[in-house]
Amino acid sequence: MAKRKTRRAGGDGTGRPCPCGSGPAYEECCGALHQGRTVAATAEALMRSRFSAYAVGDTGYLLRTWHSRTRPARLALDPAHRWTRLDILDTDRGGLFDTTGTVEFRAHYRQSGHPGELHERSRFGREDGQWRYLDAE
Ligand SMILES: [Zn+2]
Image (cartoon, rainbow, N blue to C red; front, side, top):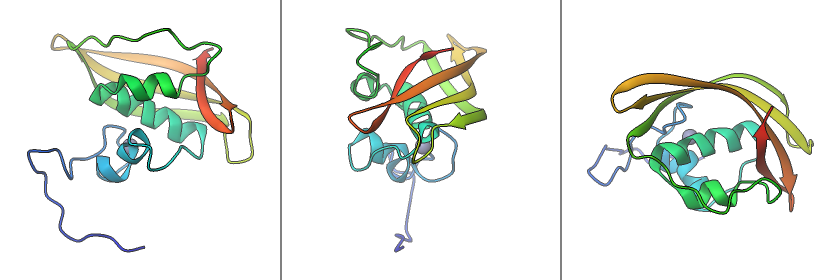
């Protein structure tokens, strides 16, 4: 696969590491999902992209990837609540040929400067063939 050699962390955010922590730059990682250039192949990929959407404040993506059965009518993010790091602890199913899956994670955040973390097992299901967030176990 061809990779562009020059990447700089510009003021436009180009080249910044993805909030999900998987390594590649945001544009090549969860950014591609947020912008609709690709879709999540696994429940874990969807989980990572949703964490990143919380981190960058993409409420549209969060609502689009919420299962219609559990999706809230609207979503307001607290700007004082900054998501800083995601640790995937465990996954169960959620693969290419599965229709359901769970992802256990720990999400780190800062609330008005104070650190905290959220530990959750999220359930995912497919809708129209695509992975969607259902709820927490
Ligand atoms: Zn990512």
